[in-house]
Image (cartoon, rainbow, N blue to C red; front, side, top):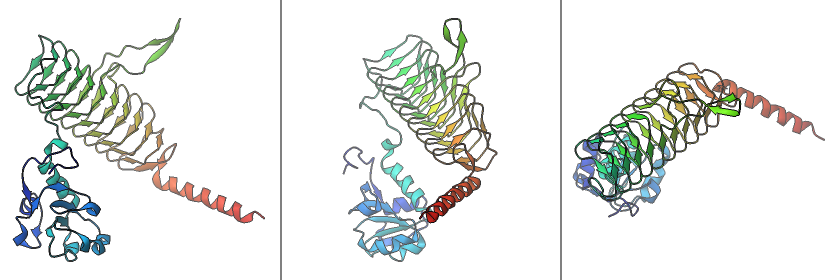
Length: 349
């Protein structure tokens, strides 16, 4: 069975296999052989599907489940019908994701976008470029002079790997992505249309108007980074733009020159980081956050969606608003304004 028409299971998976991936126990061990052929949301479960439930409010909804495999807590398992194979786990969603990766690995890391394995006859590869074993270069891709691509990596159709760039092992560069002036670690995933390593937005007033500032830096992208579709990451001007190990950047994000992003950061869609911004490790930015130039955000800090960050944020704090401030102060101000509006309405004749 195809998952939603596009992804074919890599093999067979049953309830016992899901248990072995990190569950606590099967409510009924005799159901260990229950076959799983697809992943579904709870409300669209079908026979043979794998679903999860997390939260006490699911208790009254379990009775309608078909002959599927359910991952849930010990508490919810008491409400599941007898015909459902129940895998009990402390973290149901985490186990569900792990099982999903096992069943549909190509949803996590594409093997090939065109179905080709190896180097396409229509790809352009410079004579001085070096490709390790098992590299796939798909139709229309270009790899420049002295570029290097590590073993097991995939260069998608129409993508450009600029001169001197280094792509690590087991990386995936999506269709029509552009990698220039960049050094990329292992297991990095760059989605379609991303632009990495172009010059930053730097100008100075000159005799004939605005004149460009040379950007001679690089983009350094460490291991296990993921870059979303149509995201742009500018190279540094005099220093480098750095994306730390394990950080995940969503679609349509702008990372300006000289930005330094720590490890395990999460930056969601439509964020914009101005030049020379520094993020510590494990920083989380909600959608549409804007950060002014030269601002530093400390380790573990969180910024709410649509915030405008104008000042440094200490480690571990949660900020919101535009201009952003500590979240508790932001909500206090919102409450005061609402009360003032309410009072004004009540005073109207």
